[in-house]
Length: 293
Image (cartoon, rainbow, N blue to C red; front, side, top):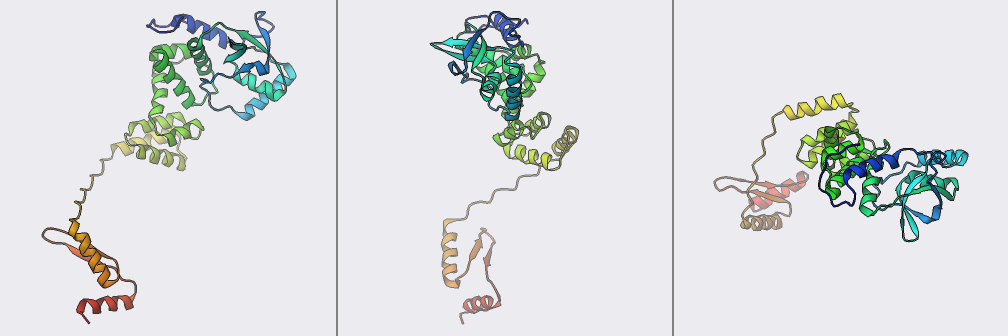
C-alpha cells in the first residue's frame, strides 16, 4: 500500500512499514508459511504499548475452544529481545492458547526495533474490527503524535477514509464519562460525535445521558441535538455582588438575639431582612422579642 512520503525518525520508511504491517496482519496459515518457528508460551511477553486495553473474555474462550480442536492455525508475530520474545501481532491467540492449555506457539520472528514494532502493532490492531472505538481513536492519535503520521497516512494504513479518521480521533476530546460509555459500547460513536459540537463538558455528559435514557437512535439524536443548538442560549444571570463584610456581623448579632436563622439582603438603597421561624410558637416568640416584650 502506498503512503505519502513524510520525514520520520523511523529506521524504515513509512511505505515499507505500511507494506510490512499488511503482511504481518494477513492470516498466514502455518501450513503455507515454512518460515515460522515454534516458541514456548512462557517465553513470549505481551507488548506494553499494545493499544488494545480490553479483551473480550467470551471471544477468548471461543478462540480457545477452536485452538483445542484445530491448534493455532495462524502464527503470532514476535521480535526477539534478549533471551525472550515480545508480541507484535497475535496477542488474542497467545492469550487464548493459555486458556486452551497449549504451550507451543507457532511464531514468525521479525527483526524490528521498538519504534517499528509499535507502528506495525498499532496498524495490526487498527486493521481489525474488534477494537472499541476509543481504543481505535487512541491508536490513530498515537500514530500521529509519536510517529509523525498525517491523517492521510493513518487512513491509508488502516483502510479508512481521511474524514473517518478525523471523526474517530475527535472522540478523544470528549470527557472521560462519555468516552467510557463509548468504549463500553453503550453509546454509539455516531451519537457521541454529535456531542463534540458542545464546548462544555457538563453539557456533553448531560446530553449523552439524555440520549441513552430516551433510547434514541442516531437519527433521533441528530434531531435532538440540532433542536438544542437552534434554541437561543439562556442569558446568564448577573452575578450577585458580594455582601459587605459588616453585613455578616449584623446577621450574626441578629441570630444571637433572635435565636434563629437571619439573612440580610443588602442593597445600597434598599434591601430586606429574612427571619426564619418554625411553627406558630416560635413566630410568637420572635414577635415578642422584636417588640421588646
